[in-house]
Image 1 (cartoon, rainbow, N blue to C red):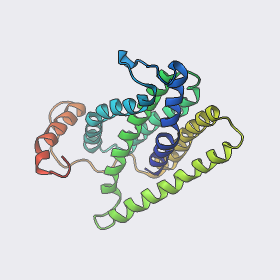
Image 2: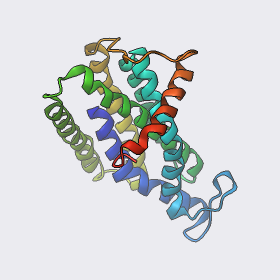
Image 3: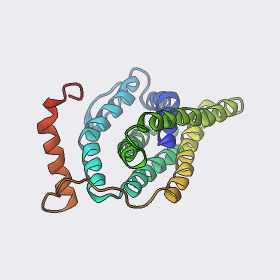
Length: 230
């Protein structure tokens, strides 16, 4: 999950939040309004609205994807598919220029969804790849490597900033984050087994998607027993 995390930090924290605002302002001015789905939004708020809208989708999608991954045991392939989806959306951000705020918001939302789905599956891999005694250490090591990895493309972007204008730098850095993400999925594809453990619970009747929705419903019904999670 290291590539997921470092790409997320580079895209969200450093570049896209500022660049999408700049692109929206180029389109309508600082005091104008963009209109995603007909809703008037100030350019400075577009990124926050995009994150909020994507998060609403993620609230339903992440538990469903996790349930499907648990029931099929195809965690590696599901994680990589979501990762490819998100990474390619990052790569395509190189085409967001001038006044293309619609393209920028759409690509960021797609990258956010791909990241969120891949990261929730990667969390579940801890159960398969480590014992209960090892999980804290494995998780901490993974996050540490992720932040170290995130520093590499950020350092490259800093050096590039000495030669590139802000728009070109932002687009290049966003694209590079996607390529960085794609590159680190290669050893995952080669190193992890295709099938891992399958949830021991008896599968619900119907397709795995229906079973995933039923498991999500069951989780929601029992969430009151976990006040911290709620």
